[in-house]
Amino acid sequence: MTTNATIPALPAVTQPHVMNTYGRVPIALSHGQGCRVWDVNGKSYLDGLGGIAVNTLGHNHPKLVPALQDQLTKLIHTSNYYFTPNAEKLAAKLVEHSGLTNVFFCSTGLEANEAALKLARKFGHDKGIERPEIVVYEKAFHGRSIATLSATGNPKVQAGFGPLVEGFIRVPVNNIESLKKATEGNKNVVAVFFEAIQGEGGVNPFHMDYLKDVRKLCDERDWLLMIDEVQCGMGRTGKWFAHQWAGIKPDVMPLAKGLGSGVPIGAVVAGPKAANIFAPGNHGTTFGGGPLAMRAGVETIRIMEEDNLLENAFLVGGYLKAGFIRELAGVAGIREIRGMGLMLGIELAKPCAALVGRCADAGLLISVTADTVIRLVPPLILTQAEADEMVGILVPLIKAILLEG
Image (cartoon, rainbow, N blue to C red):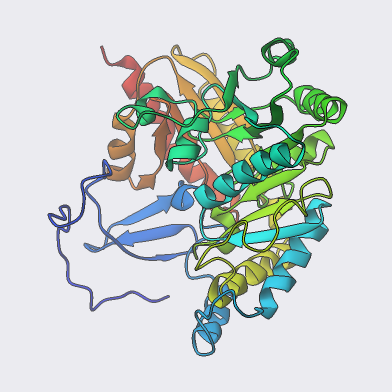
């Protein structure tokens, strides 16, 4: 393991020349190995956050790092004037695992979701709809550009950025009658857009029956079904994509985060209904589909397949969830322990943002989202022993915060 011993032990808790856009934990990380990271002062942390569901293979993976080093010696960037061989390899793998047909590559989840929104609008315009409308959901999070912010269902992150983009109809989660009522007779609706498991909104899974009902409704009304798998996709739940538990296929599926194991990458995977909506000149990106990102995606999927990481995510995730259910049984103030695979949320009956710092002090990295939900999205290589360690650190801290006035 690389220790980075030459890195000086600096506090590094302030960055006066960096825009103040994040509420950071006062930690500066220097290196990692597997599911652990170390800060510049040598303190070790178990990584329960995985770069917010990005570090699929953990840190310093022995198969990934040499492949990326090899790519760095060849090409990092060219441009989309030319073909990138690994782009077709990665697209073919995404098509194979999704059952869809074509892929557009970009660099982030925001870009992927923005592209999905443009696909939906173009789909509508191609049908003669002048002002297309897209159904979105309460508590959703799709990004921070003006369009994806408008699709997001969080007034806090929208505040100060109006006027928002028009053309969205917002409905509650898992209520098919509300969806039908909100769209009844509206000829401008072109798509339904949601996360299979809401991430920033509090790790809220969509019910399997609801997913099937929405797929059926989209077919009946000639709408695009667009499922945001940016956070819950890429094996995190034990299947390649979370919606696959319902046995359905979307028409449009944005991806990012875990697809490149830390190298920035995004993708929109489309089925026959949406795959040919864009023509040359309709959409593009400078960095999307570049050689380094494509190699990262190809190698990530190869390693996931070779090491059976979908099965590991399902089994170790189930083991981790069962551990929390067992240790927190009967504890007053626990509202729900939910999620699938290695995407888990523990909802408390009170705000618990203080747990982020307290867990870090105890050697565990987590996040708190939607004010009251502890979110755990560790690397898919997590072991049962590490799951036990996570439960052992977090449970006493949860009990302590619940006892506070």
